[in-house]
Image 1 (cartoon, helix red, strand yellow):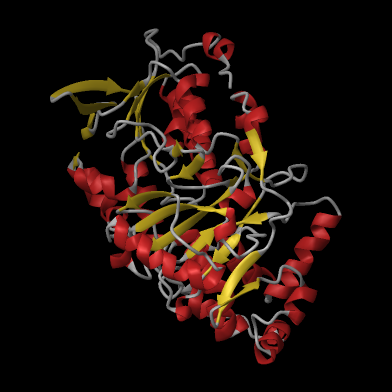
Image 2: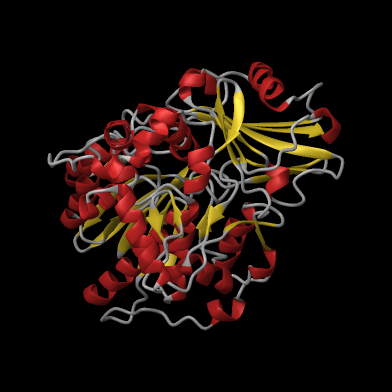
Length: 490
């Protein structure tokens, strides 16, 4: 991996009327904060990036031990034109590894049997995952009336209304767990999956909308490759599911290296307040508190961090809905087994478990089938997820009990024998923000907070999407907005 040092060396400072270099404080060194700091520094802005913990990267961390690779958080992400540009700038093209195209099955459990999820209309007609009645209900979807009420609707209500309860239970619910670790009864369709909600609004039918998108794609107008309900932004871009040879931390390590000298680890920001036309940031490190005056502040922290900070009355007044965003706990358990001790072929992406199946796991990724170098040659790696909104208390259990519970499911579903030869347990007390019904209040609060506090910007996965790709885009977009503000202010 090589960082573009020549790019950093050729930066031109952004100066105000008095010749001073414009300065920005970025709070939070997760993916969003790292990308924001990187993009601002590329524009010649004097950046300081504050991170309360002892490491950058947020949820993205990778452990290597005994020939196994374990991801603490995200295991992969989908590319876009913006992501591809970032990878080129960081010189990471040779480190990228695409998901094994032969591991394209997504299994879903029904009646304790793992069934491939149908990925085509023909497969849907022949699948045993849905009953004949449920398939007929799907085929009749174009006849369902469009909802006329202009109020927020849950994912569960939307799917039951348009596709029926069985599709909700065995097709949508498990994927909700895989993306949000959430509950479809409480998540907002308009905010969790805005593109899908838009299909009904624009075309009156999901089926008709998808057909129109395919027609537009075939004519070169747009690319319907989707991830978490979002469309790629470039007709020429091919969305790829990727990771890196040495794991996801490769990305955040490269970003960290590219902004050398700007990062302050173990330095929590305790207070942000406006002073005349600038901002004062009080941050603590090694037991001491230091203040710095800057022209703008980017808060790239989880929403709940705002609640723990000292904030001025105008900021606290408008930010209250943001502070109440829910983050259910999730435990990630990466287990390594001898290949001979797992009966299943692991010939797919992984398995998702509907809530109605009442299992211990939300799902599992067949990590060593997806990407190379995840396990020794004679072993396999399976990454399991526990807890979320469905079973929050289970995520908090200790490692030994968690391994015992997970093994019960893996033995029944995958034919696992014996004990794991490797185990890595990571507990996230607050994992993924929940875009619940009424989430517009959160987005309005973020907009108003920025409007009432010029030079303050809010970014992160609670605002414009929870995927790694969404966070990269969020960091790029907020950097563009900050740069524009500095130009106007200067």
